[in-house]
Amino acid sequence: MLLFTSVGCQGTETPAVRESTSGNQARTASAEKTVHQNADKAESTAAHDAQQPSPANKVSIDNFTFNPETLEVPAGTKVIWVNGDDVPHTVRSVEDAFRSGTLDTDDVYERVFSEPGTYEYYCGVHRHMTGKIVVK
Ligand SMILES: [Cu+2]
Image 1 (cartoon, helix red, strand yellow):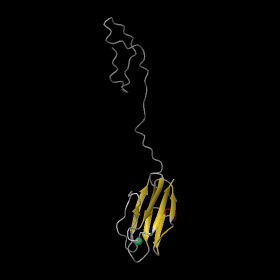
Image 2 (cartoon, helix red, strand yellow):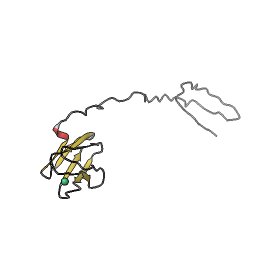
Image 3 (cartoon, helix red, strand yellow):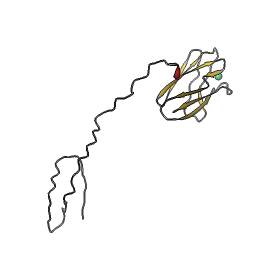
Image 4 (cartoon, helix red, strand yellow):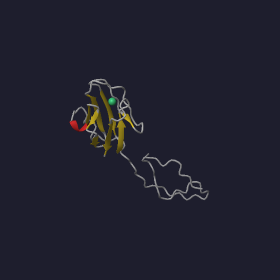
């Protein structure tokens, strides 16, 4: 009987009460819909705070150790690993969420952590090297 096919944001909805006996358009005044979502207003909060080499997002690899071993960061942080050793290391997620290539001396691996959680990782070359990123 009633088919509200497309109730869009057209704006020209005249709430006309039509009571025809054929009953094919019994649209009694329920057309008060002004749902404008304002979707074209792009949120511009916190888009550009990279480029700041703060030590709070850096893991140094020195003497076969990830330092700090546990790094806690807010979600959205780009974490940077820097290999300070003169032997190659890698950064591999235990759950395979991420994996660096081989990091030679002074090589950098970086990854943005946008999802909260705990990310354990290790060095694929030296399995005893472990670390953890805790994303809040
Ligand atoms: Cu290693």
